[in-house]
Amino acid sequence: MEFNASRLHLPRFRLSVAADLCVETISVLSDTSNFAVLELFTERRDLMSLPVIEAGRPIGLISRNIFMSQMSKPFYHELYGKKSCIAFMDKEPLIVDANMSIEALTFRAVESGEKALADGFIVTRDGVLAGVGFGLQLMNVVANMQAEKNRQIMHSIDYASVIQRSLLRPSNLALSEALDDAHLEWQPRDVVGGDFYHFARYEDGWFAAIADCTGHGVPGAFMTLISSSTLTQALQQLGPRDPARLIAEVSRGVKGMLGQVEGHGTAESNDGMDAAFLWFDNATRQLHFAGAKLSLFQLDPDQQAVQTVDGERMGVGYVDSPLDYQWTNKVIPIPEGSLLFLTTDGLIDQIGGAKDIAYGKRRMRDVLLATRTECARHVAQAMLDDYQTWQGEQPRRDDLTFFCFRP
Image (tube, rainbow, N blue to C red; front, top):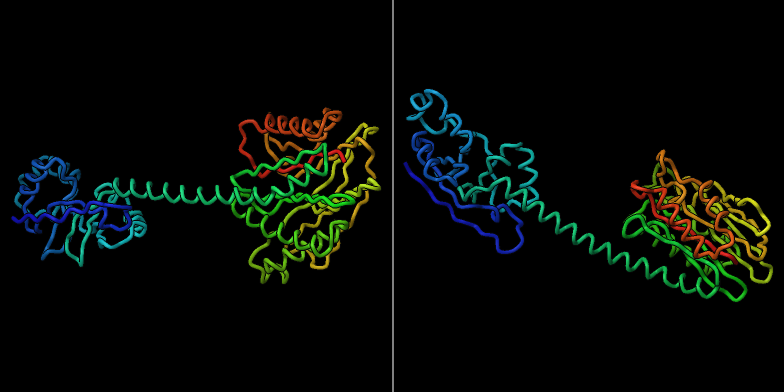
């Protein structure tokens, strides 16, 4: 009987190949008797599996648990003790090259089934036995690698959040300078989000926009970059005083940038946004509103109910949005003391309450009515408090953005 000791490989840095999991072991030749294998397992309590080799190359793997279970059966000593150990070996163990990546090894282990994870696998170099690896060790390495990848991804997303918030900062400054009584709430569902807003102050008035782009998280954040940059270009070309024309220009820009002009047959994506664009004229106190699947809610001092100014049912930039579609402006006189409210569907569509239903526009209007005499910031806080109470233990469904203001 001949025993061979393989080289021990200890990982120094990050585990990346099968060799990093290779553990020192002994092997037996294919003509080794079961009595000899039993003696080995009895003496070496740490030996969980035993490679079987022939001409220096592994041909099978003996599992300690299976072997000891078989040899404990009545008469198995007498019947199999002197016979070759190949009687109880796994003739098709998982055998991998030392240079195989951990990712590839993981797939191979899963394909091999439970035995590769329970009994381990054989590691070779140029076909010659190098050692064995174990499923628990592999699972631990994979878990650590995944945790590291997740940490790196989250670090990148956190930094992307810094960039996204930085892009919104000029709008926050312009809003604080233009309106004394206003609040703009922006809460991405994840670290970054698919909602964005834009606010700009001019000598004769101000422009505001809120938008809900396709998706949330990282995909939504990419869409906000595309949409907001397209809006900035449109404002430079057309100015702020025609919201409907601006929406049309942004729609054409998004469609062109994403290649969504030709139709369903050739477009690789179908993305866009719901939006509301506003221009407020200081001299006339008229609000010019254009909406794409978003509405404006207005509560004047002499009104007993919140009035809804609906946007159009055409989204911005989608494949189905005609390239030449023209949105329309709705010109609304705004009496002193009027309360106005814009929101994306993250507020209205949130599931919650005793019956797990959507928050809805009715509940939103009730909050506006109940807080109509308070400042915009207090109205916004009351809305947030009611929204969070409604949400309860339900997960957040979408990004949340709303604009509450008194011109």
